[in-house]
Image 1 (cartoon, one colour):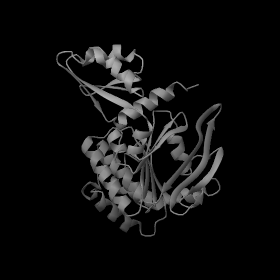
Image 2 (cartoon, one colour):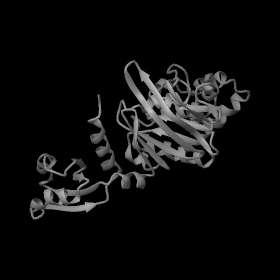
Image 3 (cartoon, one colour):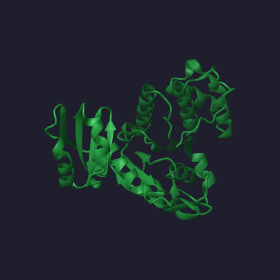
Image 4 (tube, one colour):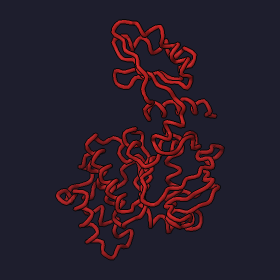
Length: 308
């Protein structure tokens, strides 16, 4: 393993029959960083995460996870990482503490009771430890799942859309905890559909149809897109959208709240498309730095045409 890399894989590939789910991707995640893994449904994010944590065997590729060989030492990887599945996967007819006790015994933790107590306190679960998992809200189920991931003190967390379906406060609290953990040296790779979560990551990777199509810091990914964005606001914005989408140079026109974002990589063509509307009463048009969501819409539009 290269010095300082929690994940270091090359050419990672997975096929299901004739379908290539993950197509020769390279990922190198330094120790202690938080990386976001993004892309549309079916892009290969979950398959990649499952290969990294030893649950799926790669058909091709080499590399290491926490220093263990991805192909020959998958059992060691399973014991060394914390993996949080997209779907809640604990026993709903057991209490929080009973679920954690089961996990502690699975990992054969000698100090299981003390670890459980520490984890309950850390994640604010102590007062609810006797509550059945099936009675918990989405946010508390998420905390239980994270507690179970952390019980054996992993150095790497692999989180598959951990905040899907939970309220904004629970999402914020979850990310505050993730960043606290990263300051203690924990490495995190997390898949998400939320742009505000992606912006909390040290680096992001966008995957489409099994291929990495963008990577870097948020600022780097936006710059690499070569995208220009104009924002249209006002009462007439909605009726303009469909017309603008048909004009040369307009790669997409999408609403973010009440504002219409009009984007493309030919600035002059965008100016020409918008020029007839600039004097329209009640309408305001101005150029803005593209948002991360602008870039991801562009990436999704651009790569959806490559589907088989």
